[in-house]
Every structure is written in C-alpha cells, then in structure tokens.
Image (cartoon, rainbow, N blue to C red):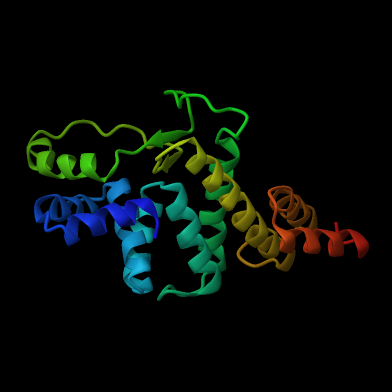
Length: 219
C-alpha cells in the first residue's frame, strides 16, 4: 500500500479519529494531498469507483497523479467513468507536459517558486489546514493563479518515479489516440513523437508500437 494511504489507515487503526476525520475533511474541501491519500486508500480497499471520484477531483485541482489516473480511466472507460477520448486527450496531454517539466534524477535540487509544480503538505498538515479552513473561508481573498501541476511529494525518488510513470503511460495512450484519430485529429507524426517519449522512459509496448510505425512507414 502506498505510504500516504498507510498513514491514513494507521491513524484510523490506532483510534486517532481527530486526525483521520480532519484528513477526510481536508479531502472534502479539495486539498490535493488529502484527495490523493484518500484515493489511494480507497483503491487499496477495493473501492475503485469511490477512489476515482477522488482522482477526478485531484485532476481538476491540477494534481499530476490525478491527471494520469483520471485520464487513463477516461481512455479505458473504467472505474465508473464513461469512455471519452477527447477528455482523455486533454487530461493526458496536460499530465505529459507537466511530467516533462519535472526535474529528472540528475537534477535533484530543491523545488523553487519558478518550478512548474507545487509541493503539497503531507496528510498531517492537510488535516491542520482543514481545522483552519473555517477561519480562512470567513475572510476570502483574491484567488491565486493555479500552478501548472500539483505533485504530492515525499522525496526526490517519488518525483522521479512519478515522472517516469506519467511519461510512460500518458505517452503511450496519447500515441494511440493520435494514431487512431480518437479525440483529436489523426496525426502519425504526433503518434510517433508520443510513442518515442514513452519508449525512452522504458515502456516496452510503446517501443513495439514505435517499431511498427517505422517499419510500415506510418510517420
């Protein structure tokens, strides 16, 4: 089970209902970190449709993992989500753009204000944010422009693993969409570009699709 889901499950099992309830409240208020934690916990509990509702909200908030999960569900028509190639293309394209902007393993530096991602508080801080939410809502202020992507981080290795996973999966599916002309105009060159990105990130299926495209001259 992912570490964030383990933490929330640990809070419940040890009877720490204050933090567990506050974390659930943070998710209900749209805190990206809490939404990701809740989605992972629901997935681990075998409740994919409930989990996907959280992933969908996380995607709408700009969460990178949420964009990938929800975009994949839209592509497949799974977890209670109707198949929609056009929306899948929108979500997966944004996920791929954000993933390509993330630092790779050779750029293990602090994430600064100019970075295309926003670090999200761990569940304990998300819970505190939920407790403080009523006071914050009482004094509304001008909304800040949204970040390009929100990433729930626990370390540099998490960033690298997520970056590679998104490039592999989103690149593969976007390649299929472009090749078949589903949700977007048919574009063999774009399909090859996406397959190549996914293949370079270690996706064997994308490498096979890329080889087939080259062998048949469909690029």
